[in-house]
Amino acid sequence: MTTLNHYITEYIDYCEYRKRLDSKTLKAYRIDLRQYHNFSQPPADLLSKDTVDAFITFLHKQYKPKTVKRKIASLKAFFHFLEYKELLPENPFAKLDIRFREAKLLPKTIPFHSIQTFLSTLYAQKELAKTEYQTRCCIRDIAVIELLFATGMRISELCSLKPQDIDLESSNVLIYGKGAKERILQIGNPAVIAALRLYQETFREEIMVCGYFFVNRLGHKLSDQSVRFMIDRYAKLAGIEQHITPHMFRHSFATLLLEQDVDIRYIQRMLGHSSISTTEIYTHVSNVKQKEILVKKHPRNWMVVGSE
Image 1 (tube, rainbow, N blue to C red):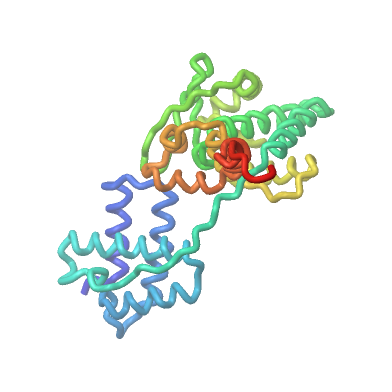
Image 2 (image 1 turned 45 degrees about the horizontal axis):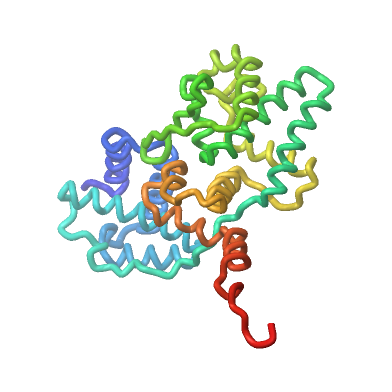
């Protein structure tokens, strides 16, 4: 008898070689489906509506709504595959109510003055560096943060950049986003171009050997975690109490552009969002622009009432 474990293996292979999903998505699918496999042990009907329903209830007891939503999506896609392969008489999700209320959390941003302080601290540390090693680290760290903020790219996208993806002559960056989607962004600030050019010249040999644009102290590909540690260190040096993450530079990029009256559809393309609804969450964050409108442009300002 074909086991659930066999079906899962077959599905992961399908996702990797037919759908060409990235490694992080495949890893998430493996974790989520392995969890379902461990939950639905015999004598339960492993592919029945009741078993799936019980598993979803279990998830709600164990995890936050966002995590539950992802795990349900993984399971739903798996059962859709089984239906496609005609391995199921009926998809259990066809008769399951999986809707639930999910709190919408506004993206956390970094205030403009904090970003300015953060960048100033980066450049100051470079001037204060006492050794060649410290100077090189600062040159790389400046290039990482400047590019992160200049483009709003995801940290995974930044760490995956190849040398050929960055064309400093035309000031273009080719970004490989989610779902194997490519987008090109322009770098419009001379200071950012200068920071990237200096980094490229300083680390030219390591970049050629490594094959990735950003390298760590061992000459290997720079990791997401290394950038997180980097940001924590400079935030402490800058005296910034707010906990800053790489993704907050992306949120700030979008929010600050909105406050400069940039059309949200341009921001959608720059962020690589497939749906405008994903980008629209930033309209709720842009309180500075909202306040400016209400203070300066509200019709009440032109009304003369009573003894005013």
